Length: 128
Ligand code: MN
Image 1 (cartoon, rainbow, N blue to C red):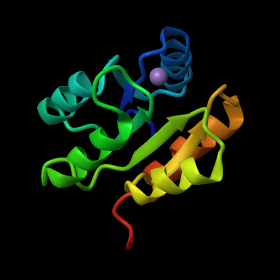
Image 2 (cartoon, helix red, strand yellow; image 1 turned 120 degrees about the vertical axis):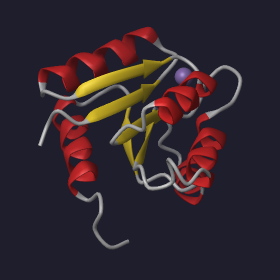
Image 3 (cartoon, protein in one colour; image 1 turned 180 degrees about the vertical axis):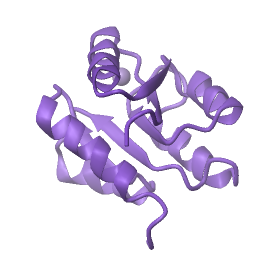
């Protein structure tokens, strides 16, 4: 474990930096983007092991970005975890329907955050 590359797509500096610091502390490598467009370009250039994707982004939103990652054979198998403050059931339904592999909530709960990342990385390559 660890040393995996995680791409964080988040326009909020505080959230992005906290996520980065936690992941780096755990030994993960981190790539960062402030927009979905930049995140897709990074993912295409160097496919990460997992993407942590904000939903509300300037320009393209995280829902559309997730669909594009899934549509590209080079990135379709990468787990994408929604990084969201939204707890409304209809929003969660939309996120799940868009093909996200899980959620982590903002503000970050450190234990839950790291457990969710480890869990999704561990599940890679398994059936389903
Ligand atoms: Mn945002």
